[in-house]
Image (cartoon, rainbow, N blue to C red; front, side, top):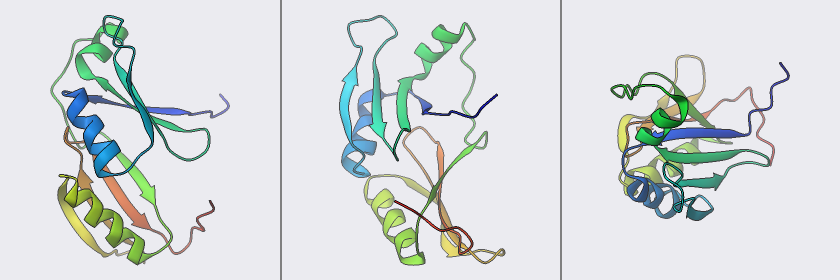
Length: 140
């Protein structure tokens, strides 16, 4: 398989609340909720870096689309890593997330491996790590 991940979809319980968090709180670019004319189709897409989008879709609709039973949420199933170019940028993103209503689970701090990171949860409990890794160059 040649890796071509272009969309990361998060299951949410309240599409409008999550839209507000990501659009207004974190400032991600979106055209809003689309697909409302279709049963199980309402979704919102946000532009990330070139060629990659974040989608939010109701958990019940994901369960329907995949023919799986909806299960209880677990925030420790995976994390989304948002890599930035400096410690200061980690602090700024964490502050922005906090103001947007995120739950800060781990404040920004120096890590054991030489970096700097913090964790927050979105309104549905999805974990985001905001991280500066001195060994990784961030290119725009």
